[in-house]
Length: 97
Image (cartoon, rainbow, N blue to C red):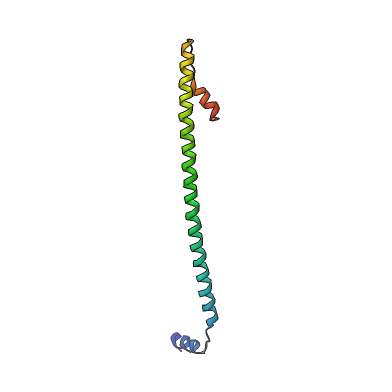
């Protein structure tokens, strides 16, 4: 007996379980819903991280502007007395480098 005849007879006798297909569809819908939630949450996280990074950069820029102003004034004060103030040494201490 040819294989395709055997397979077609087995197919006629088999009773497919449609509950499995319904369960698969339910789980796929749940997966897609959760994937959408994950994408939304990831987008929110990325937006907040971008805000954080922007504020962190702004804080560093403002600190450096103030530090440079103070360093310039101190350098001017020390040059009056004949010595030169090394502002980079202070910067290394402040930034813990």
